[in-house]
Image (cartoon, rainbow, N blue to C red; front, side, top):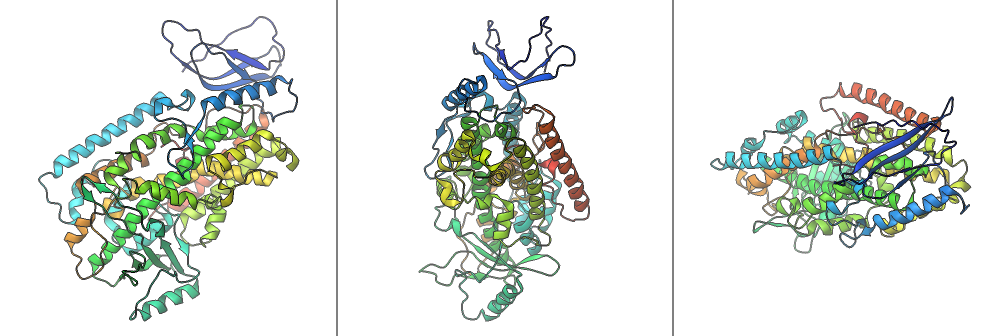
Length: 618
């Protein structure tokens, strides 16, 4: 990293633009320019010209002075001409593509090398990403060799591969994963806290056969007390299962009913592994009082189903793909001078490349999902289509989502508590920036670039999502602020909550098996250790799950914490003061969460501001 100073003898006056070109010598080595600042003579204010782009080839970059400006209606204005040309050029570079029909659109790039240079990983990120993939592959190979001559007949045999990169919390999961209390806890504060909801009636799919009157009475009592909860995996019903190395895998669509005890513990009451169907109108119900291995296997089926929905619906779709839509629409519709571009650009760093890599390595034909996950081989795409059809605007906004699921004020719900606090802090930050530039609702309504950006997200990127509550225009400051808060929250806090838990909750494979190799049990008495081990992932699948959990869940070495980006896109003291207050609010929340976690046996770290990355980068 270098800085260059240049003295100019004459007074240049009030600068509006700086032009930048890199001379082409024998080798066209691109340079990445952060910004240019110009200090005038005497007491003249410093003028800043943000760049944060690659300078390469023979192109001349025209950098406007960094003060944010809304679009004007004066066609002769030099800034208006610049922003119109910039958008025209960007719309040729940032094009939409359909990866799979029925899913949100993506950046048009079949592989990472097709991406615009300014969206690529920088060298440190690229080297680390590729090195950890190789390190994970080496660890997998060593574990396979280590277990070649060993038995694989009981749960303790998973200890043979439970070494290498893992967290302290993963070790606690290893010790306690069979406990009903930890099973319930994960629905509230685990890797996927997004499915649980408070019951308002007994689910129609819960077919209680004769002889289960006592269970019905218990369920109805909890329902009346407001302490009955459910996790329904019906989205998986009918999804075709993978075939891995010639062996058929299996999927289920469980329903779990849980009760909240007065001490705040959430405990399972009954598990229905499959919904009723004509050939099985009253599926077997599994209870905590069943033979221990039968109950453990039923819980394993639930954990496998949670793995699928977590990774595909709540992680890939609701954070990665939504963030990519926001990123592409921002580059296509908002010029660099626009205040909303300046607000959002730090929160789309690296998102296009990590998603492109996912489409070529993780969920591609022959990718990780096909090799080890029960929804691989095409089922994952069908599941994503179903999830996309259910993706609502409210589901991306914690105040609405948690209210809809009946989880507001739930004791011990740490994800919910921290998510709401972060939503409030991000909302204050967004409102601070918006109110600097949009003093009235009619200014919002009259911004053609902003309105085009809104339509681009809802109608184009999210494929006509107005039917699911997404706006097609902004009519007020408050509506704009709410939408922008959703954008920043999704790209930062929500992704952190959903991504980071993989390292803790998935490293001990029996706690969250990526695939199941035998059909779900229909009887309880026949379940043996051989049934359990024959259902859980084999050595190769388990090693792959551990390696990928570490690769995706670990802290990134070039991680930028929420609100602490170094890029200075805004000029002037007022936006700087808003960002500074945002950072102060985050620091105060950090202290609160740290103090709380010191009192907990199971600290919840994923939404500590210092652990939240500023964009979706992994």
